[in-house]
Image (cartoon, rainbow, N blue to C red; front, side, top):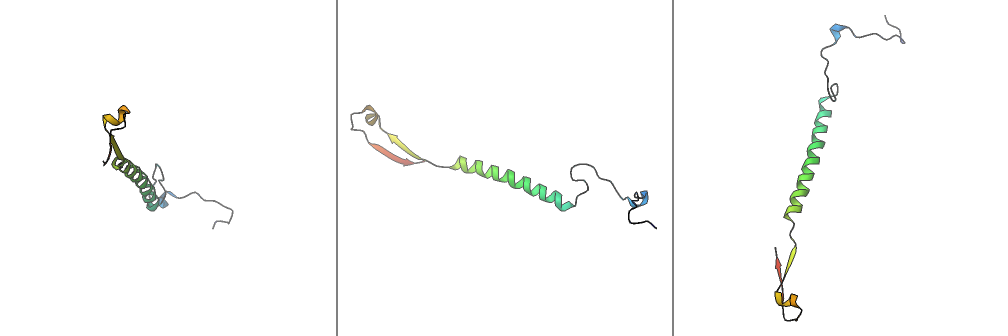
Length: 80
């Protein structure tokens, strides 16, 4: 019998497997959470890039007469 303060080393028969690497001895849910976080981060970056690419701005086309300063040119507004 072992006492309360006594520490025993594990027996070879008690060790089923030893895993190496990042989070090797964590539960599988830990790996899923890491993967979901990484996927959400990449997805948000792609979503922001697509929205920035699709953003439309008002375009003002100014006739050459209006730019010349004689005041007879007209400004036309178009949506892109």
